[in-house]
Length: 180
Image (cartoon, rainbow, N blue to C red):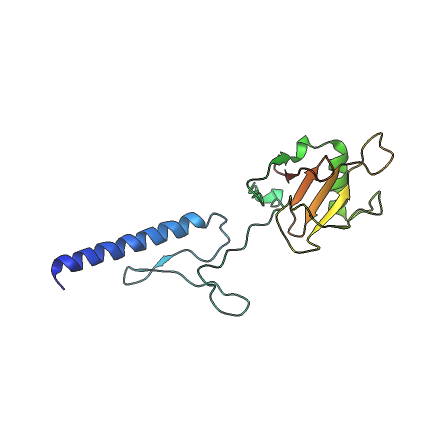
């Protein structure tokens, strides 16, 4: 191998290593992922593999767990909120009607709810929410003043803590952003 070929090989390897480190650092925006790259005595970078329940390092193609949809405790001062579907519209919690805030308070306390149907499984038949396994979503009535029945307004919650608002009986949804 000529010295020119060695130089190109070193440049290519160095470029790939730098690109990999930059990509890894840029993709770890939650701060709770596997440990960051660390320098070894030889000057190369290495990463410590994250242990999985089976004790093996995850495959590079395996997705990282998403951040919880519930807001962090106020004591931390963090306001990280990650929408479950960036393509879906979101709504500030403070923009919801008072009855929706009442329903969210009941959900946080675990009830009691005004309707016996509250808390039943929401099937997501029209696939307007992100696809999940059956039983993942649950629906809760938002009282509609002047309505003789449950009305059209609902809050739908996911098992990971995400919350959705619909004012038109599941025709459209907005993800509730608790930060505002």
